[in-house]
Image (cartoon, rainbow, N blue to C red):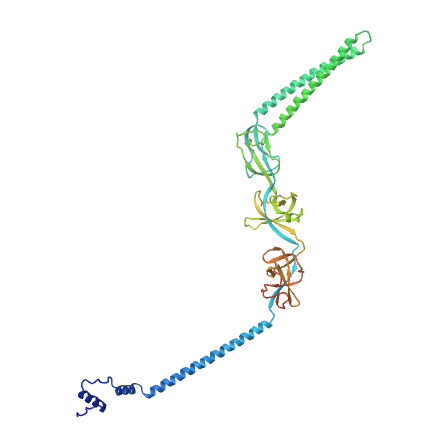
Length: 440
């Protein structure tokens, strides 16, 4: 039996002795008592109590959080139910506007073209050469002012020959007049001679000679008239050697230079001399739709605006119409005349014409009052706190206001604006505010 060592327990001693007695016997590793001692040393009793307390705190916190969340959800559900019941029991609010009478006249803006009051292309009336021109493009001329002169050598020669023929015809007429006087006196003597002095045959011969001389005199006189007319015609043509302005205006084109050969006439093979336009008054031509043309009257005022961005506007009047509709475009040509004393407008300009078109009696409501449903366009009328839907037909829509062609809407009716699809015919509503009709 061995002595115990310092710090060695009896259990360790016993195990050691057993090992020494039987070296081959299995030994417990680690020993149970050792595990118990280790456990007792690693986890004291105070640690277990703290773990238990922590678990209880966690369980309590979770339980409290569960009940708090449940309470919040219950409160939110109750609030939602209250709001739902309140919304179900409250009538909807709508904005309203007043239906007014449509305009008596409505503006219609259409494109137009300017044209001169008069526009004339000047051609030569005689054949010749251009001697010189007195005016150029852009010059303002007066009626009768000389524009150019033409040299006409052929015409001058024809005039000289015609005058010579006229003089010869006058001389021939004088001879015939003398012959006629002699034949008449001879016949008078033979006619008044006593019977038996001259024979009847001689008397008849003198009578025939007198009649023949009278006829020759008449022919010579007629030839003088013919030659005189020829001379007068050529003299008239010589006046066209000077090209003059037919009216006050502006020279807008010049097509010839000195020395150019000019030919009489205005065919496609002849060249014009000048183009002159009178622009102290301007014509505006515009085409209006057929449904508008019948509502425009002669003398109505038309506003003419230029399209150059200068914001210039002029007032003219409808002067005339074609009184017929173009079968292709279904439009009527309208002519507007306006003064242009300061020459602000030029022919050929693009302008905008604003017509005041007479309108049939109609009702006008804001565009927000129009509803498009399965039955077509409708308007909701507010009367006695209830909604009533009325079918309407739209005549025109300018974006802000809608003009109604037909329906039961009357002037002064209050119409609802922007109502939702959940409101039905006959539902009660509350008016939010009275909105005045939007102005065009």
